[in-house]
Amino acid sequence: MEEALIEKEIFQIESDILTAIKRKDSMKLDQILTEDFIYRNPMEGDRSRAGFLAAIKSLPVEILSVWSEDMEITILGDSAVASGTQKARTLNDDGEEKLSASAFVDVFVRHQGKWRLAWAHGVDLPSSVSNRPGKPQPGTV
Image 1 (tube, one colour):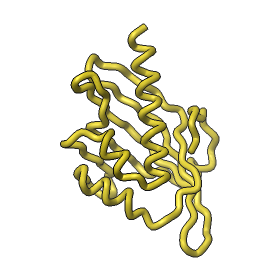
Image 2 (image 1 turned 180 degrees about the horizontal axis):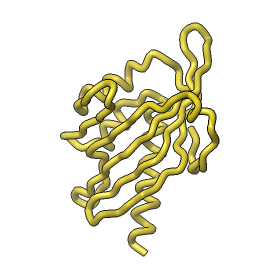
Image 3 (image 1 turned 90 degrees about the horizontal axis):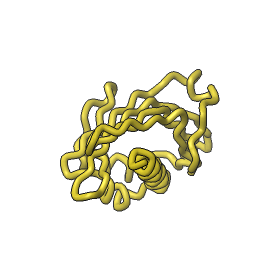
Image 4 (image 1 turned 45 degrees about the vertical axis):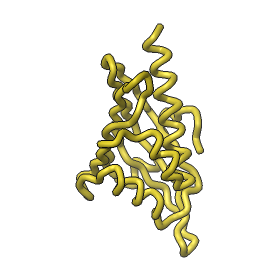
């Protein structure tokens, strides 16, 4: 029973993360991330918490919508792992709309009863994956 409640909580935090990314709301993300948070992308290397927050705040596109698909949650005691596909529809300054996709793994830790995102890994996927339908999760923003 507790695992089901934890899964629901992690799904909600993931939804909050997507909403914050769409709004470029680094203050909301700041509340979700651990102090030693790391974001890893094989094409860009590691980003510290401060670097990740700055990158989100300065995204050069308007995010029209962002959502996750095929997300699975695994509970490991005081840690939880969420993995799936994140998709985004964006608009650049030239008015060009783009659909992108990335595979992600997010690692959460429970500290003083609160779940926080400690580590995230994202890999950009080819455009053919962006257009393939997956199992959408509730909360497209």
